[in-house]
Image (cartoon, rainbow, N blue to C red; front, side, top):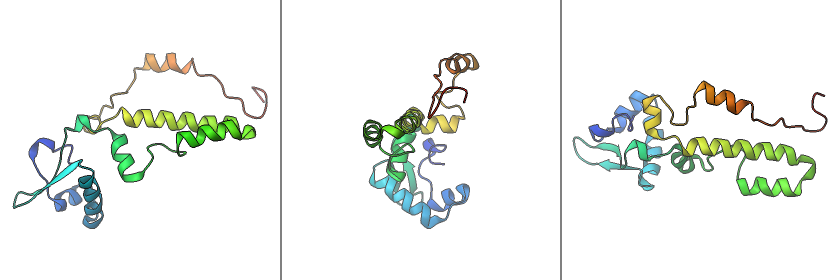
Length: 149
């Protein structure tokens, strides 16, 4: 909501909670965390509330996710996965898949901004032609046997 109403000034917690169907206390905790990270600012007074400190196009989802949830991608830390790939030979292929998924998720989150979400068109959206070309270039992953088993 803060991104959609970025140019309209501060918005009261009560309005945000109502529109987003969130408990006010829960929202207060999130906004406090965002304020401490200098992503939002609070405005006092009758027309007070919260607003973004930067344009939505300058805020990648990865920044918000790291702040609220920690690591941006599933399967943990990339360095930890690389270490497992090097040390755990029987499970190397599986850990490589996890690393590839982690890297892909991180790339998407780093290249998608709040502005992309409110416009309804993610920046990294590819045409059908580009997807088809990419689909043909994926190497099959073989784990524990021969291809086709």
